[in-house]
Length: 193
Image 1 (tube, rainbow, N blue to C red):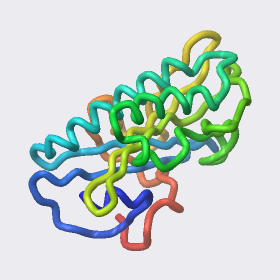
Image 2 (image 1 turned 180 degrees about the horizontal axis):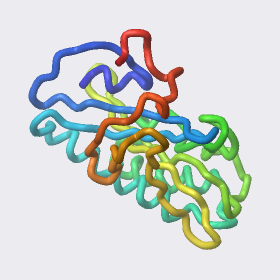
Image 3 (image 1 turned 60 degrees about the horizontal axis):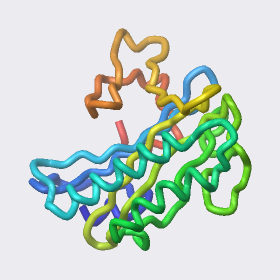
Image 4 (image 1 turned 135 degrees about the vertical axis):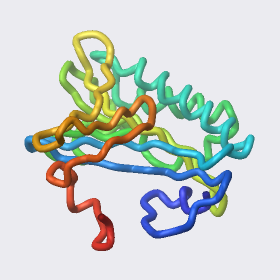
């Protein structure tokens, strides 16, 4: 919905058919951070939103595939931007494609134009292109990847201690309860449970 075009909106709203929710979540486990963003439609999304999401998914998959040892960070960013721009949404992609992640939620390497740093095996970072229409809707798709000796590898969220088998399956946008001990409290507002 229109609040999805605000990059880090928090608030309470009733949900209606056709609304798209942008959910950005993270956790800290054993000193390391995770970060994930998904879009969930309540009922059927508008045709324009569904078309934009297909472009977003293509851009994200291409950027992940481009993230190989030796590839400059700016090239991974450019791969996602070219696809989004070719579909006519270039001006609606208003942030970097990704950021490093580890002991800090945002750290080097930054996947952004102007960063010629080559990727090396072991780099962990987000790939999170977005398309935003102010006042209407916003979409972002974020996964964490780790550069292996060849291709980048998508990383799932791993449940920590005291989870009693609960989990989050990021590929299917299904969620089980997450133990409060592994949720990064700084990302939750005071009214969040």
